[in-house]
Length: 201
Length: 201
Picture 1 (cartoon, rainbow over the protein chains, first blue to last red):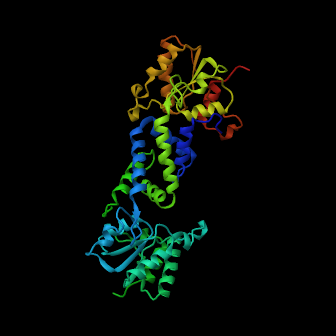
Picture 2: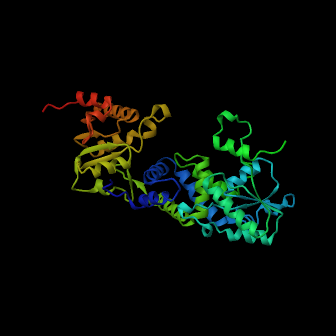
Picture 3: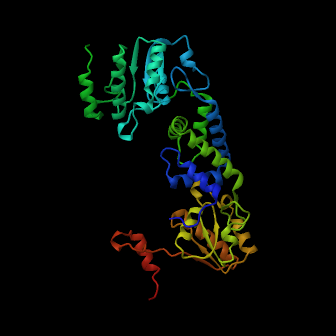
C-alpha cells in the first residue's frame, strides 16, 4: 500500500505503537502523526512515564499487584483482615472491589486469566505464586472474584480445584441480578443463575 | 469509581497514555497493564522510539512533511517535476499518492485541515508557510488533493481562493466513480458529481 517509506524514526515510532493492545498499523500511524505534530508535550509525558513506570514499579510480593514498595500498602495494613484473600484478574478489579467498600481482607491479583483458546495456560498465569502466597501466609478463606466470563469462570474453576486439593476453603462471589435493575432488562442466563443460587429468606 | 489510587508511576503512565488520540482512561489503563505485565520489551521500544522521533525528526523546509534532513528526499530529487505542487492533508496521503505511481511532482503536507467547528482555523494550519513556499520556489500549478470530506473541501476552497488571488494556477483532483466499482454500489452523491464532471470523449 505504501511506496515511499516514512523517515526511519517515524517508522520506528509507528511500529512501536502497534505494541499497544488494540492498536493496528493505521491507528499507530495516526497516533504518531498526532503526537509529533500537535502534542510533543504529550509524547514527552508518555516517554517519561514509561521510563518511570518501567524502573520504579515492582510486583507486590504478597498480592502480585503493581507497587512501588516490595509489599504494597494494602498487604502491609494492620487494619485489613489478613485471614481473607480475594483473588481478582487485574488491578482494575481490585480497585473496583475497594470502591465498593464491602471488603476488608487482602487481595491476590492474577494479572491475567486462563484462556486456553489463546494459548494462555496455568504456566503463563503463574498460579504457583498464588499457592506459595497461601502457604507462606495462611488464610481462612480464598474468595474467587474472577469475572463471570468464559475465561474468568475457567480460571475460577481451575483455582478452586487446586486450592481445595490443598484443603483450603474456597468460595466464589455471587452471580445474580445487579442491584437496582429490573428483571425485564436482565438476560435469561443471569435470571436462571439468580433463581438457582437463591438464599433462604 | 476508583477508591484506592494506583501507585504513582502507574497513574502517571495511564494519564500520559490518554494523550494518544482516541484513547480514554479505560483503554489507557488496559494499555498500561498490558505493557507492564506482558510486554516490557514493547514499552521499552515505545520509549526509545519516542526519544528518537522527538529528537531526530524535523519538518522538511519545503514540503512540511516529517523528515530527518532539513530538506527531504522527494524535495531534493532532481528527477521530480519541480513545477507541480500537490497539497495533501497528511504524510499518509502523500504515501498513498506515491503508491499510485501517477504523480511525479512535489508535495506540500498541510499536517491538518481547516475544521471551523473544532476551532481549527487558518492560523492553526499555518497556511502562510504554504504561501511562502510557493513564492520562494515558484510552481506552474498547485494541485489540491485534500480529502473529499467537509473539512477537506473547506480547506481546498479556502486554499484555492487564497492562491488564485496571488495569480497562481490551482486545480483540484477529480471526484468520481472509483475505478473497478459498479454504479449500483456507488452512493448517489458521487454519481451526481461524476455526471457533472464528465469529460468529453
